[in-house]
Image (cartoon, rainbow, N blue to C red; front, side, top):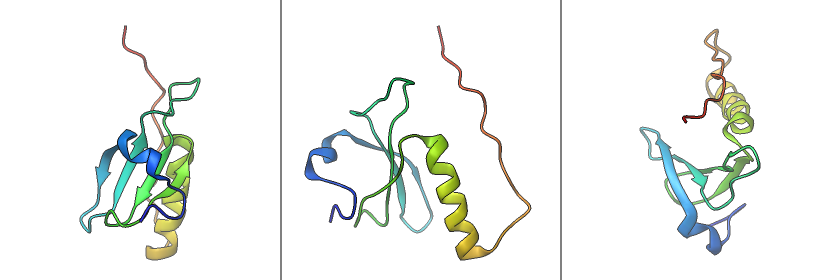
Length: 88
């Protein structure tokens, strides 16, 4: 399944960058880099669906955090993203 946000043209350009213990994965669409160099982030539950989380990791992180709070309750643990760096 490529539902709800995928299409077959995406399959060749998706790259897994994170995987959970239960088989859910986070993927970047490496063919869709934006002007800031960011990739759209997708989530696939057990490689059985494809859902767009956001146009970048910055946008996807709050979505994942909100979903986590819904499932497991709010926690005191938080994170701050590091400033973007480019290597010479």
